[in-house]
Image 1: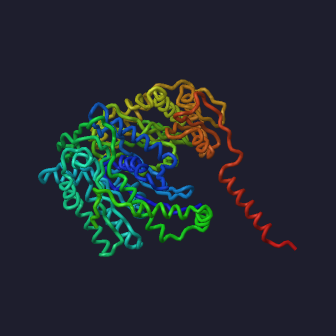
Image 2: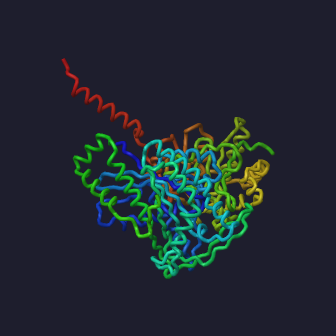
Image 3: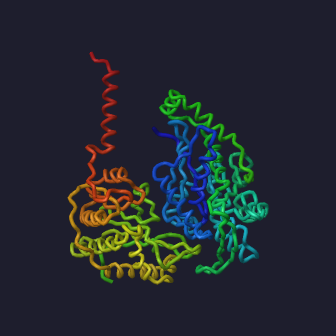
Length: 327
Length: 258
């Protein structure tokens, strides 16, 4: 039965933790859905991919040190297939992950990815919190913008926003700093630099992104931007971040971490990604003219009511304490 | 350099530059149709019609800027009509696959094969990734040289099963080499020989339903190659027959007969 597929895309540079963010969101999902009849499920090979990523993340925490280098970067596009289901009714969600370098190099392969991005209602921008925070002086600031690929992201966001507005279709951008453990004191961290991180991201590095969205939305309420910091590991502390010359002649940030306590991963904030997806679905489901057979199936099985109730419950769920609406 | 009859494509990354194919020519990502059964970052082998794909070859020497070992992907198409060159090209691919599968059973990696790529000068690879044409040509020429120097694989033992599935055991991997050789010699869309790291036996059956013959190695497959029963009709034909029957039934029901 043909169904509407909800599309989500990630927009981030190479090694920004895109895959780990998806894995973290799914790790958070089941706990987050307790008390609702809904389930977030990974479909097909997505479950195995997520399990492999979790194993890599656990492996990265070996011997009391967190080694981000233990995580394999992506080399090919991967479609993560998820579903938000109630009973036998399922709303398919697809998240596209791809090598972040395609964005920088503007490779021919990125053209296909760009088409997908422009069809998405949700755009997730993973941001390496350490790179965004730990730069001092003009040289490091320029290097941080280069490593975070801010210019290419601004262009891609502008294209996406323009497409949303021309289609009169709503869109949400999620600015998601990842590896935030060292900047929040609400989750076992010793320092609270959350305000500084927020200012760095929203008022400095990604101000251009927000301005582009504001400019394209021309004052209507179609587009929104949310700030959503996530602890992807939840059990590491930043020890040092040094900027060193890389073979490409530019500075790059080398971070060292130590593992807290027993080194058990404890993700925080990723569940809010699912709230955002649920809110988008809730909005879309109200305005969709659905296939007659799908409607009939739901009516006969009484799942329509259950699905609407579940989506409404997710939609009404408040954002986590760290989330703020930017636009 | 002597033509080896294979059009080669190498994908790797630099310390900062992300994964990409070396050179400016467009590469057809034909292997993406198998992406639901394989995580290409991990060891994967696909041999279909006259081409091959090997991924998850993890370097023991090169690392990216966050310290992750860099991987290589090698894809190739047989590009010759000369029987003699073709025969040599198939021998080279089989030697390459034999080297790749050498330690797969024990270490679940292509560690032996990584040495072949690690012999290439790192600076030359970094330059090639920056679209330096001369460096790209040199890198590919060096790979061709390395491939020609690989030791000859043991003669393959023909496998009687038309379609089979196996775990990554010695027997399964030998069967994979034998089937790969048949696939490379066969015509277009004829066969498939693959190691698909996310697939199970059911997935193998699905993948093989598209081809006339083939074999697939899966992580938790049987110890020895196990013959897979071919479905009597393909899913597409089955669906078509069902729809025809449904239309005929509806017509019989609704159209009045005088």
